[in-house]
Image (cartoon, rainbow, N blue to C red; front, side, top):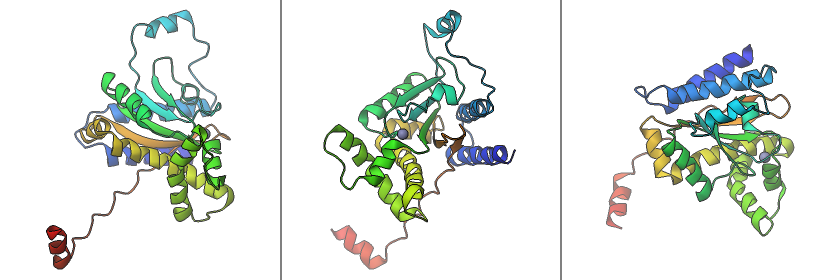
Length: 244
Ligand SMILES: [Zn+2]
């Protein structure tokens, strides 16, 4: 019960922070729907069964209307349809090791947000992520394509080394997993004018969550505090900058 109250408070805070007051309800409903599905999964009360039958396939054969976009890790144990107890056609999923972003990932997310009007993007990291652990442990990222994944995660690891209260061992990995989720959230908004515009219009929410392999529970991350407004420059410095 305590977890449920905490989760409800975080969801309410996430939505209050990210959706303008006049926004329509879909982003809120989408987030609540994922949270409810995860509660069913954790409690072993899943409604939806795999394999699906022919009628269920036919229901979505001609069109799709996913209510949430999930950017998840490729880890074989993190299967969004299962852990959120959703059906065929409910989730538009991009899976890549370390739940990282690049132009192809951004394009996939933009496609769903625009084409289907999907109102929620959830960046889903997970406990003991192998990609993040490798990025923490690597002295130098290896050459080649795996190195490209670790180099993308690298800045999140550096942030974790600065921000984590105990930057050693498993605690550092845990902290880096959360920073890596944050990094992907920021990257979506900083590098996609399409997604940033939908967020400003209140038609899209970008949220982060972490899946716990041990319990099956998804913890939704509270919103990051807004950046501090920059203090005005002293008049002499402002004048010097204007002259440059
Ligand atoms: Zn992973």
